[in-house]
Image (tube, rainbow, N blue to C red; front, side, top):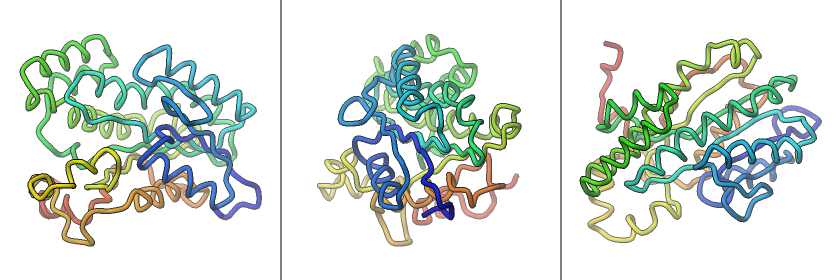
Length: 266
């Protein structure tokens, strides 16, 4: 349990698979109430890749929660080299959270956390990142489509760009009246390589594993199970977390420390 005698009410996106499914399961095992959101197989079935889908998902989640939500954990995301990736990974998180923020603020201990990625440290498209942070989905999708048209390599930039922008959004937003002013810690978790449906094909071959490990070296305990990420998300959104905010916490087996070293304050 989270230290309360009454179950907390959680909304978890991406609850149909991967980290989202593991997080929903962990919270339920701890006695919390969970409303899952996904394209299919969840309490709320909606497409977070569209503006209308995000609004509809938020409205349904609020309805099912009886207008009482204690925490939101946004795990939904895709890694395809297409512009839909930026719509789901960035706007499918930020807009969805913004829709829920007024209800979340009513909780005596409101919390929010999102899933970023180690990819937030990888090469990206600065123009795409800035379009995302400007909230211009039309421009972002256009840039993402142009990258995808150049081939899978440039198209992949949709993914790290979406995650870089998301981590920067968390840092910008966490101290605003909407979040800090309402007493809501807002954080991101950045996994390294997680064993999940998103990675299983890539990790099934020696060539794939070699490529993954070159980009995300994990000297501590190697690739992680999804529940490893879930445990941190659960703490960040528990009543115990009162002051940790604006952080992207790299839950990555040492990949960030390996790649960037200790000189990260310049």
